[in-house]
Length: 314
Length: 279
Image (cartoon, rainbow over all chains, first blue to last red; front, top):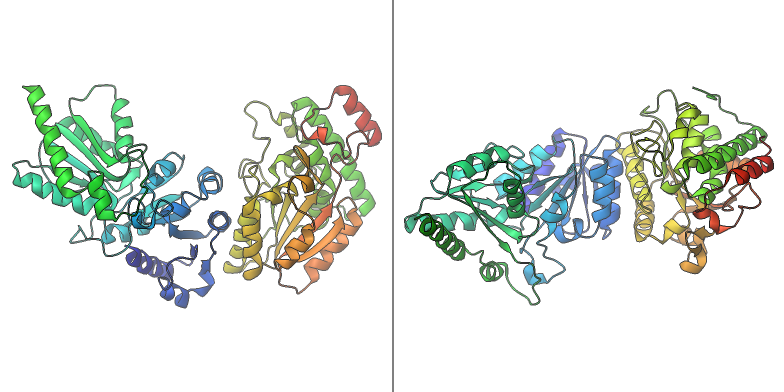
């Protein structure tokens, strides 16, 4: 995903002289092409993320379109107040790319992985929050975000993630993309967990279920039109995210459904990471399994929950 | 609009400063707003900039070629509002709503809420990074404007100030001019006793800045310094350590840190106005 982000932003910078790329000293050769073509618009801001956000604000206040890039844990975690005041309050068109949000960097320890970034960014007024599912959505997300007049946080993975789209989908901020139709069960996945969600859906299909699967790439603003439809037409809506159950996609959907005036008969099941830290080196795949986010465990949890609903109905 | 004319004469500017100080003190009393000491310490700096240095158009506040000004010590907003009113950005009477319910004249300034406010500030340590961005943008956009920023000495305790201080000389941002209102106080004590700021100009110069020191109440000295800086081919970013007195202009407020939070009574406003010779 990061290579796709880099090549896409380089291509876009050719057409739009307002695009300026800022990074905080990660990705050694990732931006070589950008630097070669547009050296006057590339800045390694050093290991100083707070300043990077403020510099981006100053650039955006002067008519430019900055894109800032570093690990999610550092560009959301460290300069939160700069994001809140300089970018969100002033409603500036700055795109924050968060590399390796979720459990991507769990092997590197608690400093480098982050399962709270969506919650943090989603809480800010004016902020748009996007989790592309794959490289195709990553390219689309950066394209539409650079057209958006406000701050956008885009959480991407690392590299070589499976691609879920065979062709480029119609990517609109705040509009989920259905990748598989189905009945009774609708699974909303967000971000790099999507390939595993699709595997889980296949396993569910083999077990006799027929879930619909949606890439719910925008956490904020919520696709409320889609939510209205699925909470009306399905028996079970499932959210799956590599993020804390506090404040992420599942929490956003739960907040939305609790605010509806007419109660829905549809059940909501949230699958995400628990309210805890990991205290040992653990690979992303293992961490997903530990937290019930492997395809098998997603499928098992969904089928068990759906069976309980059916039993209660009878 | 009032008082649109630029006054280059230093004696006349000193009189403008006295009037502005008197109005700030009166507004603080009427609106029950704090931060009086830090407002009074930076009046002469603001008057020097707005009446003798900056290229601006009060009747066209968003003019793209204008010099930028960031009040990074946002708690001195009342001082900036009063100077902007005297410079013709809006009528003086509007400041009567300062700190009042529903007012656009907030205790800390908000970008686009009022003409002449180039950034939202109040949380210390953000302004220098934003100023770096604006100065970089001038280069990218091929503009010749200068970016001025006023910081407090206490603000220099924020780590983000030193991130920006490391950043600016590398690029190098020669049209970035930072002024530090070095009044030697912060909310709860002497700034040099709370954190080790001194020697402040040496810290910046070793970081690669062109650092100058000046009496922040000597308008003539400041105008001369600004002129020599702006005429210089030096490409380094500039920092000016302006030595000032918190509460400057009123004997019973000068260097008394109680005026960080204290609100003057009606009698104290009268006494201050008498001292400032504006009655």
